[in-house]
Image (cartoon, rainbow, N blue to C red):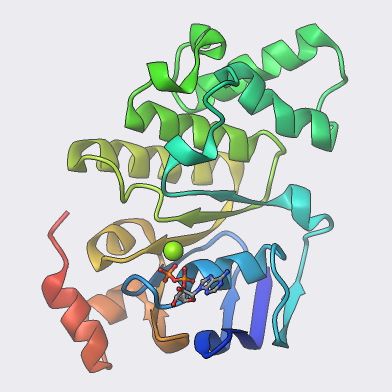
Length: 239
Ligand code: ADP
Ligand code: MG
């Protein structure tokens, strides 16, 4: 679905993404793991065309409109949701932008209800403000919002890193279920291998702007080639 070749993005002397090549196949969940500052979010932003690379190419297959077909869920729904905008409106906004449903109030309200149901939140949450929700509930809203434009590809940029462990598993299971139901393709970013191992079919290990190794989850977890991957494996909590 997405093929990245020799991608580079420097910020001054910081080589955030330094010659990355990888492919995300349709229907898979590719995990991108690496410590903080290794360039994961920059790579994601390049793939979503939120920033331009210094060099290299990205090819999209089966994606017509990147703004609509590719969406992102951020780590911290606290900062990605406007505190003064009600949940329903926050979810409805991308629908209006991408003209997913007719601009009739009843249609939009129904679709918001469906999206809340998809992420297992009660319909009456549409009238609430973000502060009235727990962290896990806010992340569900972040997911509903990402799904509103009917995307095919989702970047999940450390979507459970700020949540309690028990809540983490609930959100991961929801993401798995949605992927299956909606035929989605994921680029799942995390800084620990346990979350990635739980979620992903394939794993790419990133450090200092480079991909150190890439392989099936089974292979990376059972026979990591790079010393850095082994170090990540040893330091990751068991989920
Ligand atoms: P990660 O998501 O793996 O934590 P990032 O992609 O956010 O890593 O950052 C990689 C490196 O690029 C870091 O050193 C970060 O400080 C730097 N960086 C990211 N975005 C910018 C920016 N807009 N301007 C300057 N430096 C940046
Ligand atoms: Mg990041």
